[in-house]
Length: 167
Ligand SMILES: Cc1cc2nc3c(=O)[nH]c(=O)nc-3n(C[C@H](O)[C@H](O)[C@H](O)COP(=O)(O)O)c2cc1C
Image (cartoon, rainbow, N blue to C red; front, top):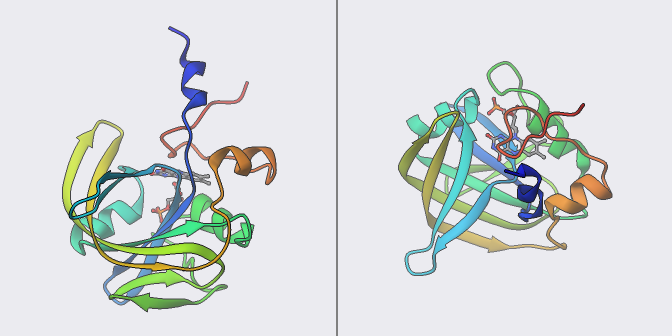
């Protein structure tokens, strides 16, 4: 089996946000897709070690900010390479609230707010199914995962479902 065949799957980039009590938490993900158009439902895949998953399990509401090519790369890095368990990831950027979910300030294509309606155990990761409760279109060109690697020269940590070990 040639698992490099998986490299041809395409993705975007997203910042997940949710409240942990009074504290905004969240992380960077590339795994998100729309599952239904009627009663729009989306799926995201979160590593079981990610604090964001714990917080979404408690407080079902979460946001997805669709990363643009114009988004500050530091947001992708801070949200993707540190944990909300110990860090305030919003400290340097600030945040607003959209339908009670935190959205990190900055340039993003869209802001979506969802309520988790199902959690599917997939071993190392949990697929969270979220029902759309709010959506706002903003500006910018959606950043693809391929652009993130090729132009931004970004990497993905072990917890990303699409992580590839470097030799
Ligand atoms: C480009 C990129 C893509 C990522 N994709 C995912 C993903 O789809 N699912 C996931 O669980 N983690 C993904 N991660 C890793 C999490 O963002 C990272 O483990 C983060 O530190 C978790 O933070 P938390 O503990 O505050 O939830 C990705 C990171 C980067 C930089």
